[in-house]
Image (cartoon, rainbow, N blue to C red):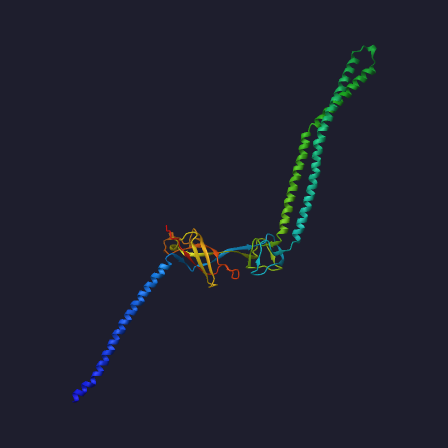
Length: 373
């Protein structure tokens, strides 16, 4: 009786242990199945991700880029007005800074006066040249005519002297002979003087050439005075520093009262032409082509979606144009994946209310061309 009672009491305990072991085996099989499902799901997800992104190239080493024009004065002087402030949008031709113009205005007036003097001297020289071109030939003709007249008088005096010498003593007097000789000498002297006048008047070309040279010299002085006046007017105009194109004022380091030098940086003007410079790994370039579409996300504006295209690929890695490019021939060469800058032009998606400052981080996704090679 006691043994039977003991066996009955031990049955529930053995049954409970058997159920626990069964449940443990089922949990183990379930865990293995779950692990297998997780692995299969992970592989499927990885395969799906690879398939979805196999025709894409992306990088987080990308930023907005653009043109930043440095504004510098072309003349030195004290700043009397600053007409713009930080981050202000300006139009092409708008005055940014004004430099004291008084000394440049005085230089302009002085150059204008010098031009007037040179022009007056040139006008006088031109009149002198015109006169020389007319009077010099006239003087030569008059001297030649005077020579002919003197030669005619000389011929007549020679004939008279000869007749007096040929007459018998009884037919003439010594006074008549002396008068004929005197007239001949006077005629010879008149011819000599007329010949000298002709020789003096024959330098017509030299006189005209001298007058022409003086005119040319004064024309050069007038041209020089005009150039000096033009430069003075340029300098006066440069006292107003104007915007070369539309843009936003940045890096302003000038204010009213500052003395600025020629070429000194006053501010920078960031233009509205913005693009993306993305540094892709070199092994991302195999299928990348100009014109490939790119979707661009901006870290500063997570909800802003930009669409662009690949404009060009720089012919040189970033390290090649660094301040200290690698010297692979030194023997310390370690091959690493290089980064190559790619220019991506933004086609649409820009929001005027949310400008893109230069240098902010973006992340482009380039949809690679289907063609290879």
